[in-house]
Image (cartoon, rainbow, N blue to C red; front, side):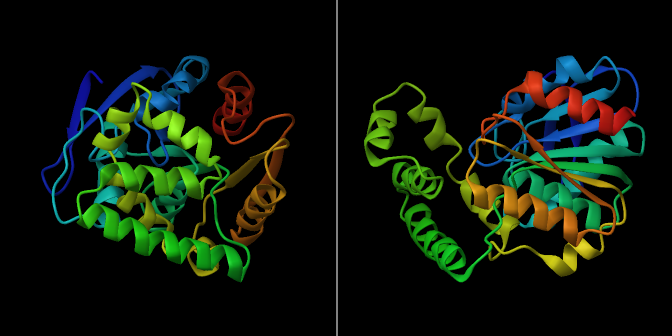
Length: 259
């Protein structure tokens, strides 16, 4: 990240800027940094000015206690200022929930696109989210960062054997480094249910995307987002799962943001 803006509470937020055209800010999800969404910047920069940033507590950005979702919305406000005073937002997974919250807050957001925000659609999923929140809070309070990462990977449905394999991989240390930010994404997701009241206040156009190869509940959740906002569109990307391929996603986003 070669640029920096300062959020309202004094936290430095690192970002990279590329391209020319309408501004688009890329918002990463849990256990990820700006580098995770940066592969979208290249294909989008032909038609848009793209800002990929490290959310607070990650990568080259700072962190200031105590955390609140409002602080992350202020981070986006600072980035929008740096982009020229108005921007579209693209958020993946829980980053999509943050993008929608930012749009609902009244920031000058032109459009929002989200990919597979993991909102719960039934009581069982909501209970699982509540149990995750309780266990995650305890693990981070006790300094058990590895356990916190394992809880998150289990929540995503990763098999226990694969999680144990990941613990032995070189990337595990980096995952433990940003493990405290799992609590941030958990707060962004609130109780995990589709926030119908909040979404009803998002007045800009919203594109809710899901992968055709993802689990059915992911597509149902994306459809629920599109139906809950006043100007929503739902679209499925054929053969894609939660790890959507930038080459497939970028043209869809470019058409939405610049078209």
